[in-house]
Amino acid sequence: MLFDKFQTMADFQAELAERDVVPFGAVTEQILSPTEGVVEGHKVILAGTNNYMGLSFDPRCIAAAQAAVAKWGTGTTGSRLANGSFAEHEALEQEIARFYGVGHAIVFSTGYAATMGMCSTLAGPGDVILLDADSHASIYAGVKLSDADIIRYKHNDPDDLAKRMRRLGDRAGQTLIIAEGIYSMLGDVAPLQEIAEVKREYGGYLLVDEAHSMGVLGDTGRGAAQAAGVEDDVDFTVGTFSKSLGSIGGFCVSRHAELEAIRFCIKAYIFTASSSPSVIASTREALRIISSEPERRQKVWDNAKRLYEGLKALGLPVGPTASPVVAVEMTDRSRTIDCWKALMEAGVYVNLVIPPASPSTNFLLRNSVSAAHSAEQIDAIISAYAGLKEAGLFEPAQAA
Amino acid sequence: MTDYLEYLDFLYSALEPLNRRNVALSESTHLVADIGLSSLEVMEFIEKIEDHYDISIPLNILPDVNTIGELALKVGELNP
Image (cartoon, rainbow over all chains, first blue to last red; front, side, top):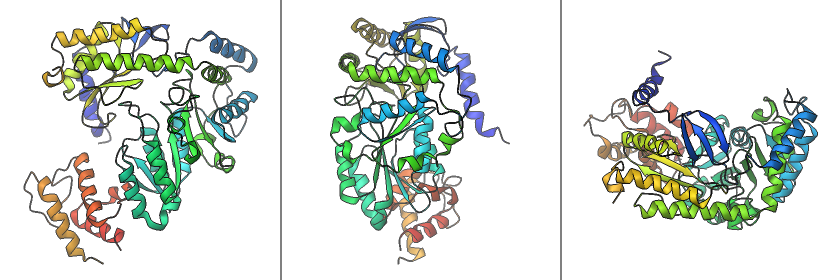
């Protein structure tokens, strides 16, 4: 039967409904600010968004979007290749290329389309893709479409990458290595210095997905490669507008002039409509803001460290280092759901993550912080977790 | 060039610790349906083979591999 494979999910949904929880696709009924909303009837602090720079309500971004919708209309009604390249799109491409200090940029309609499009197009039959085992679903979807040989290296393990590059022999030179700046589930950062070293030794091309690290890492917010000082080793940077830039869309930038030819080979670019001009306008404004207001980067890290240290002090298993994504790892599904529900009731919205979206068989309560969170809000999130601990909701081994 | 039978022997020995159902292993034993390997165990098992022969097994070939015999043939192709 066609539907048999969906039964596990249907059973899970039924179980959640019985327990009166809506962790997936919880409806935000009102959005009160970048950090507060009403979700499923609860007024909550939003600690499960990717609004790292807190720009979703910035008056300058809103004004830019409003002006653009009046000037250009609500949508382009066409692909970039046909009628959908407006002056706004072209301007954003120039600005994002300049932001990264390279010559070439492509703007996509979503971040998923950007990574999926690049990963499916850059390597083809006879080429090799070496991707981190914990890569995002959009990377896996892309490489599957590529017809290249797909090989995984162990998560954040440059030695395993080097071993696999060595095994490729002559084919190392036609290999696309893929890493992410910050991994979205646990918030861990890729060891890009070591990965770049492997590339220098064996050859190949390096693509870095800075979706969660743009704005957050690097002296001017370009991401993990800038922070690691290896931007010259990166051939392609992909990223998104839907996190630090507070809108929706994706990009690829490169110093290779070939990107202009590659552009017209990417189906995820050709066969989809371009972003609404208002989205592009707010993105352009947000890019200007993250360039000129580095204090936002400082603030998101202050908040990240405050939350990380607070949860760690409670004895919760939070991973090795502080990051704007702070995940509490749980082993029991039922307990994780209870915790998620109790957090909502205590006024905190976080993400519930279940395998295979989580990198292991563990379940996650994934928290993310914004530059817009106040220290008081971070403390309120920690207090909510403390309340859960007191109520005995965490597994004994994890609440020691 | 290692012989097909030698590949089989190595695969049998590498599978032994994962063979919880104590299935009698043969060329036609199905890795998932018979032995009941989880997707995580499949990846660990593949890694063991990769390190033993110092090769990388691309993910693309996995959909075509169901039995121990099919895997032995693929490993042979990747280890000239």
